[in-house]
Amino acid sequence: MRVPVRVAVLPHGEGLPLPDYQTTGAAGADLRAALFDPVVLQPGERTLVPCGFAMAIPEGWEEQVRPRSGLAAKHGVTMVNGPGTIVCDYRGEVKVPIVNQGQEPFRIERG
Image 1: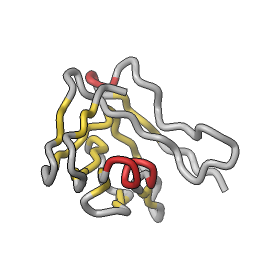
Image 2: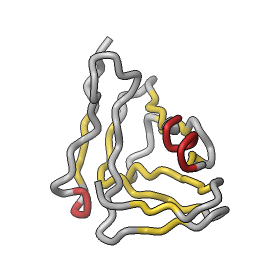
Image 3: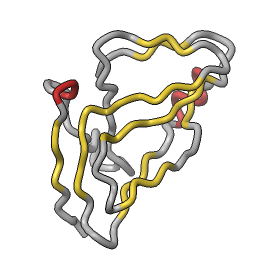
């Protein structure tokens, strides 16, 4: 079932693609980092990554943000609270709390 969700692109999200499914078998839509400058996440460090958009989820629905298994397996980078739930009455920017549990610094760039 598809449910319409209103999305507002924020100024620092201009030019980035909206969340979308990369393949027909994808379980979720990919988010992008709405950063102007790269961020280097040191081992053990956490940060909140802005996605550059806000959305109006219909009442009775939620959105979930889930970690990417490839990032965890290859780099030790995952979400602090995965999955993260975005409730229907939240209207702020979507941000993803991530942590570097790996042994090496991890660079996050725009996009």
